[in-house]
Amino acid sequence: MKKALYLLVQIVLIKFLILFCFTAKSEINEYCEENSKIFAGKYNIKYPKSIYIEVINSNKWFTRLLRSIYSESGRIDKKYKKYQKARIIVNFDSDIKCIFKGRVRIHGGGNDHIDSATLSSSIRVILEDGHIGHKYNFALIIARTDTIGGRDASEEIFASSLFEEIGYLSPLHFNLKVRINSEIDRDYIFVEIPTLEMAKDQGRNNGVFLAGNKNNFSDKENLGSYPNTLILNRVKTPYSISKRNKNVLLYSLDKLNYINLNSHGIGNGEDCCKEDKTPEDEILKNLYKERNYNLNINNYIGEDSVEKSSIFNLLLNIINAHHGLSAEDRVYFYDPMFDTIEPVYNDADSNILKKEKLEFSRIFEIEKKYITKLRNKIASINLSEFRLKLLSKRLDIKPKELDEIFQNIKNNLNLIEESSSLYSYSPIYAKNYFKNHIDKSIPFYLAFEGENNIFEICDIKLEKCETEKLEDVVFYKLIKDKFINIKGYDNKVLYVRNSKNAYINNTKPISKSIKKFQSIKLNENFSLYFNNSKKNIFIDKEEKK
Image (cartoon, rainbow, N blue to C red):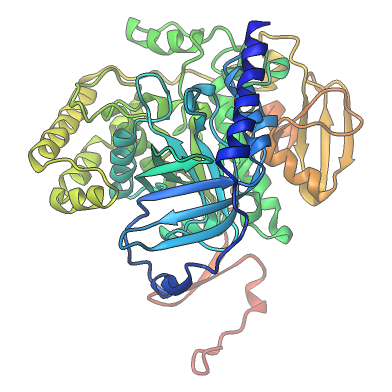
């Protein structure tokens, strides 16, 4: 009763303040007005020093924020994470100011992303009529303090920059000040959201970003007592592929869900690892029981991806970024042309700037083969240039301190070389995994297939299955939101794999790589790939047609 009364009082006070002290403006100026020439062509001014958010319907905004603060589970319910229209003022140096139309929503899995004292929160932002350095989709994450979870700004900026320097897809991070419907400046981190534009900007082909289904962790009704053992994946960027090629989305999920099912499938959701090994191999057994184990990726991906995945995992370990190893926090990029999956930097929560030694390592034996390659990559980094990149993101680390940090990183890599490796247990429960799961009350349905929008939807034991042709809007919702309600089903539906038989028998996804095609080499730099009869291809090298 007291909590509800306190909530009511805060809402009334906020309404009073909004009415008499602040009115969110809705007029929209031209894109940067006289400064628009700066944004034509290559983006060559510094990152914004501040962003001011004016939510148009501030009454609704604060109501959602307060209800999120007092969530009993500590999780922010998805119903409070709905976009609202906003006026977004972006301030650069030299008094350059841009005003955009946009949409914003509350961001973060838990209410540790909200400062109840100032009613500030982490937020997601989509610009509708412009960009910030060609970034239009981003998060503003509240910086961590003694009382607010948020994220450690310095650690995130350093780690994301390091992964980019090594050659991984890594969203832009930088420090700035933010105001949200107030005159109070707070420290925030700008974090780019993965998009097709980000992938192409970093030299990748058209592809798809995927992530663990963490956004459903507040759904206790469906996840029960074993949420970590039910993690599959969802497509973050479903519209980065044209509708006529949307089967690619199914292929990407099939490939990554196969990895998850085999990682979960070393056990039954509660206990694992029936093979008796040495005491060192108890590490993974204990992690599994704690619901804190990592994906064993490299046994289940193509050779082209093993090196990149291994070095990525090694790098997370040596900067003490174990949060980034958890299945629900992983982000991947799928390249449909070469049928490859590569890891993407995401919220690793590193702990390296204090120059602490290696806390512990979670490395499989196959990953240790790439320690020398990672050591060489780290040694090749020009620290003076790297420091300038950090400075541009408003992270100032003095040269001597930066030398010490990198020396500690190298020392941690040496410690991993000497440490025990995780044993690759057989995934004996992976065949028909959910039927083998310890929790016999898992309520959701499983969806398979999906080509031409035709799905097979079954109960958890696969005893009753129905064929359904879904509308496009439901198709995209199923692969994007993971657990969804579909008319005619009394529980939510989860997409699993592109073939029910492949799921039952735990067979590898069929490779869709262009490398499986036949090819004709036209010159040193150009080859033609094809998957039909060679006799139908005519090449005129003289006329070049």
